[in-house]
Length: 209
Image (cartoon, rainbow, N blue to C red; front, side, top):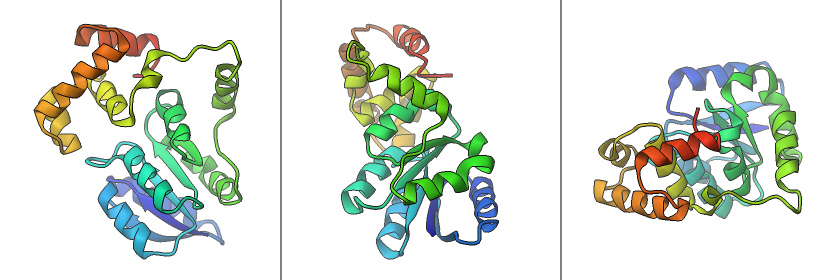
């Protein structure tokens, strides 16, 4: 199995390579340090599965995932993140990822997850699978944040994490005025008025740690 890795932390990439080196049928064919590099390598290399970091600067894992699924709809993409799966897994899976894994679990579960998604399956932990089953029940109601676009969701999460608008703009390669517009739109969709209310909302819905 040919594996493409994208993560902006060299230590993480090295760790992933060490995990996969122990598997006789898995080979890392490319390493990217950001989303743009990941897409460039995906178009040039022959790969079976991509492992993307959720929180890369610029085009983050979700942006890259959307692009990869458009260009390579049959190839599985596994999202790896330092954040608990309750925060982002639902949105990632909805966007077409074959699975979502916390980096703390990679040492024990990465190889098995790769095998599963390459063979057409989906990877989620047993805990997340149970939560998703409950949410899919006919009488379950979707919370307002599920109406946000992927970019709006990322801005919401960064704002709620305490990052100022200028820093978010720099991280997302957008202008501060664009981020401010997103903020207004997010607050309106969630029925909120201030950043403090936004923080309270995200804590209530367990969207930030």
